[in-house]
Amino acid sequence: MAMRQTPLTCSGHTRPVVDLAFSGVTPYGYFLISACKDGKPMLRQGDTGDWIGTFLGHKGAVWGATLNTDATKAATAAADFTAKVWDAVSGDELITLAHKHIVKSVDFTQDSNYLLTGGQDKLLRIYDLSKPEAEPDVVSGHTSGIKKALWSSDDKQILSADDKTVRLWDRSTMTEVKSLNVAMSVSSMEYVPEGQILVITYGKTIAFHSAETLEQIKSFEAPATINSASLHPAKECLVAGGEDFKLYKYDYNTGEELESYKGHFGPIHCVRFSPDGELYASGSEDGTLRLWQTTVGKTYGLWKCVVPEEENAEAAKARTTLPGTAEEEIVAEEIASENSDTVYSSTPEVKA
Image (cartoon, rainbow, N blue to C red):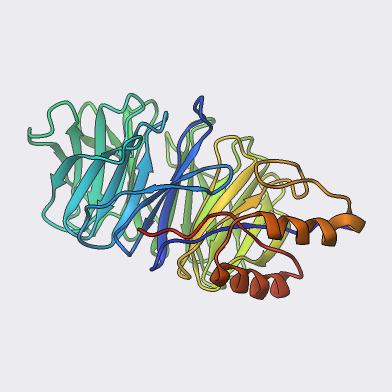
């Protein structure tokens, strides 16, 4: 009997979740940040989904969020024409960086000293965080609003995407190295440093390109419009989610579909693997994040491995011992009937 996915549901947001990012593995585990149209990005323990805190200060929808490698700093991009840098331990706002339009993307260098931003004004900005009052370096060349901007090649290069173009920039000369045109609007972009792989989604396509040359490595076609995809750290598989509310898991080498199941009650906007590859997170129009096991049935985090005949009793027992709100329990039952499975609620009610 194949074991079914039992996601951990993280509630607390009141509007669609549009971006999420994991930190690296730290001595305290790893962490997860979510960006939401409610303007209140949240920090969680990455392996359990437990709520740690909410960053309060933006006056509009938050479109992008990221953590630095050791999870000591967070950065957010918002519709209030600002990007903000936060102390991810205390929750304090450290720096507000004013822009001339909506900010969509933020990314730290590996040493956390610089922040790259991109947004609706078509410009890339590089801020020296030790001199936040200084004017940023500005890179122009995009012809429409920037959706994502990421450091690559040990922070020597920048990858950025606007509507239908992905561009590679040299940081030292601030010039474009190469550009890639795609047939439909780019919906997401992920940079995988190990192996220098760029994951791009547009329409129903999940494409893998060299981050150094932008040459295509391979691509897969999904049954529905895809909004986000993520490659497993070991490059064994990839996950994707989109407009049909479903999550898809593919074998990276063969392209074979390994799993597909209804993941949310609305379109899925973002999916990301954890740094250890043991789980992946999804964020949706339905206002929730969900955590899913890469290897179903493995004992990890809040998941306890059970043999099939004990599954129902153990799931019921776990249901009573994990905290959750009454509303979460109802949602759990609805999606459980959809997937013939049980959903654990992993977070206490958040009063943001």
